[in-house]
Length: 252
Image 1 (cartoon, rainbow, N blue to C red):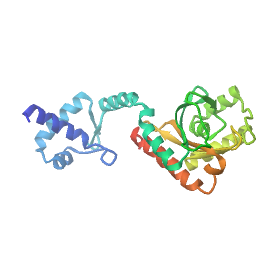
Image 2 (image 1 turned 135 degrees about the horizontal axis):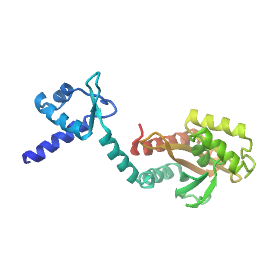
Image 3 (image 1 turned 90 degrees about the vertical axis):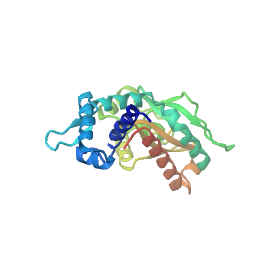
């Protein structure tokens, strides 16, 4: 490998040292970790600082990733399709659980199903891709609503109302807000006959690189199967899958 490419490789290695466990590093630490002379390390760091790829704390003299890297990271994140990332996990979850799996995103003041993997069973619940539902009913929608700002929740209640879709639909604003608080605390939600009679669902939030909820991952099917004796194991499957998708989106 020629010298220019060797220098480029070393520059990439320096930037790659910064991660969740090493958010701040000194020049000496970088020199030691990569076994390169301190004088050479300073030359690389000076270039990174001038280009905005690194920034330096004036007090501690520690270096951290700069605005230039942040901008490129945001651009890369915007180009990633959440469906492309989520789909393999959705297929795996459907195979392990034997149930239908959906991915729902916020669309205005409704929940929009952007992807679905149907259960292989004869008796199953089918959710049509592209369908929308109110945010106050069903696990898919409630898990999205739970992580919105209070002002958004109030505006949704005021503008859309809390229509009764089925026997267990929450139609009281105070009760809905208590439910949303519980979802945030436990990190998942469940639903029984809130939208369709006899239907059960378990939903968990999918977070993106900014820490915001970008989608809801949900397991749906007959209530006796979803929320029966296998409820705990299905709940673990859903939350584990949502966590894995979140990690691939850069969360955490």
